[in-house]
Image (cartoon, rainbow, N blue to C red):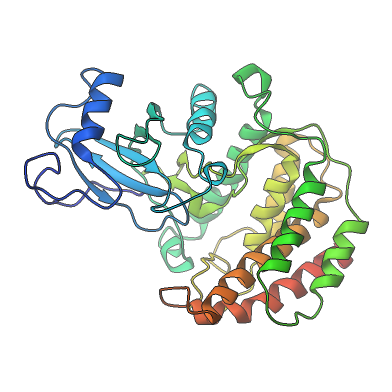
Length: 355
């Protein structure tokens, strides 16, 4: 989901003979939306795939007068639990009436015969996803600082939502959340590496020994960072996007991930985005202090969560590197991801040991 109007496209894809983008049958999508939300669509649909998504596919859809966004799983065979459209739709539906800025959900389709998989449609929100230091620097130091603090304040609003009050009491299994997360990523590492990684076992075992007791569970985003929000023309957060990893669990895991991305080591031309070093960007410590002051939560053990975030990203990056060595990745920069992994492990160890 990105800013701006869709560029001029081909003839409407539900016109005879016109080509739809991969993964969509726009004639059937239009028929479904007309049944689900009569009067919403006025005319043939056009669509294009929005670049930048890391998992589920996101399309900008228009009838020439109004724009929407459609989300569906990747093409091909996928695990339903990993790309659950109903789950994404449920969480943004629950959060839309709250102070957490999310797009308005419009329709969920569970019938795979419509366009090959479940999908949902939501409003199109105008805004910019900031994915690089160069892009963010255009705002200037003061606006950059205010935006990052707004990002923290929005996270505080999310964690203040009572899951039961918005119908999300059964949205996850918060008991044992951290133990399951650590076990999951440890198992993922075992299946996605083909080389010795100095310090990674030390980091994993250190995290296991120092596992903190979690506070009361909240709704988690699961991948909360600057490039998963849209920033409006007023330079405030217009929408939080990409809820595919959301659940109920320990709120400090969202904070630790956000702080980790602020301290992310740089590897030139890596495909992993970073805004580290942008003039005006608060430090990870400043973001944590802001969260503590606005939420009233105890962040005394937050170093564990930041270290775990480094471990998790190291596992993800090692998996990318492993697939690169097998010739299973396409695109620029993947040859450099492997060099990032030891830096992430080292940063995680330092964070865990020194706080």
